[in-house]
Length: 281
Image 1 (cartoon, one colour):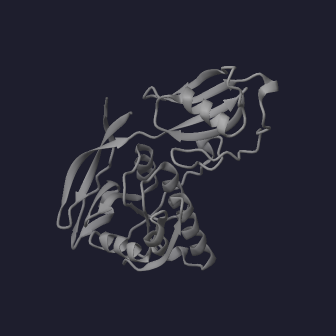
Image 2 (tube, helix red, strand yellow):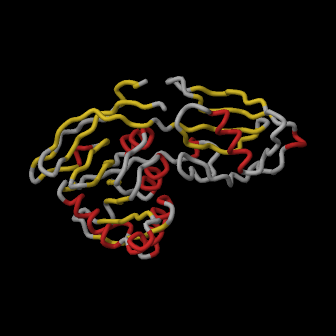
């Protein structure tokens, strides 16, 4: 598995401290079939041929187990990771007319929702001047934990919560999918005309590129999660002006982007751009 070292700022319930953390790499892989764009999937670099083969099989595009399609590498990024492939399949064996439909949901968890290229995403920079108090973050997760009624009964759902800058919970939604929980929260906020009041979204589970993209499109400047972020999630959050916090548990959390927007009492961090430092083999 490919990983990278990122700078971060750890809050331990009392103070801030700098750290160097290991983050899993997330990169986009654009897939075309016979030169026709099919989808873009978010993945950990490596085993691209197996990923493409399984995806096309599962989506009923190509299901022959006797014929091995030719998989051409059409793009490699600066880090040497494969980011685009073209699958050559005899036309009579292509089982699904997918051209122009963009209806495949495929990412490192569940999807960049049918996009055929990351270039389709609008470039959004969030302008935010409000500072989040560090001690409020554990309080937000406590409120979410208390409100997770489905999870308390089943243990099988994710949750997303929307909060004001002062930690007031505006809405909590649960779903078997963490992306769905975020969508439900944003949909509720839009329907109730409360989106403008929201400054932070909390999510159970980890943070991928798509989660950050959803928050970015809603114009929300703070994002916090119980588990780890991916490399692309951190990069996306940094560029968008989003303060990304992860491993939010046991009264601790780590800030991976725009940490200057968080303070302990009157102690506000200086701006510290979080960048990839080096590859870890």
